[in-house]
Image 1 (cartoon, rainbow, N blue to C red):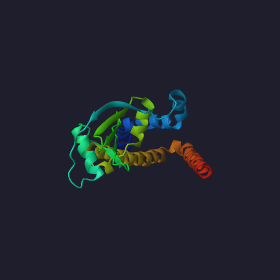
Image 2: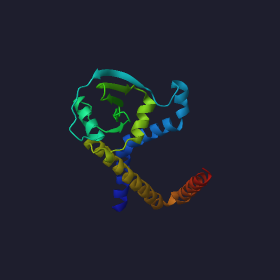
Image 3: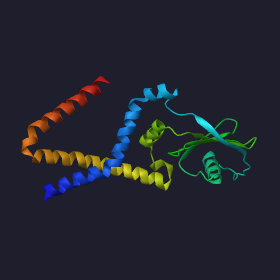
Image 4: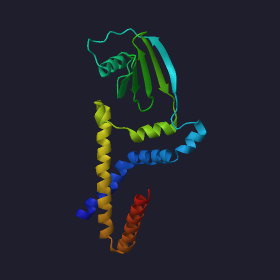
Length: 197
């Protein structure tokens, strides 16, 4: 009964993990061979392109900090979501809107009330790298948190996958020698590379 449960868990976890593993596998290939994209495009990351520029009349609450100002600007533009903000010495706000598909940089100059919105155009390698590096808990946004939770579930599922795979290997007596050899060779190669790099 336990054996059947472990085998089924291993199988269903593999099916559940498929989208995440595919995304991490393909994005890791892209990151590992970044020079191919640099050679093709001139850089790994695509440049920002001006989307629009406008006069943006806004009244911030007294004592508003850059984070509050950024949130107000993004709300006004219907671009609310995960972002970072920096304030330059002249008071200019630079907001990086971390949208997975279309990242944007919003620059607001209070002195002239000029607001510039730039976006990163579509490029597969950049999209995959954003997927790979996406984090969620710190943003405070629900979907980012949901993404972070699913990544944690995938991590736990991978650990269960490893343990259940070891269980199945040990249970199948005919594979014990070959399995032990594979485990020892894998561990030795891992240790060797860790100490060399």
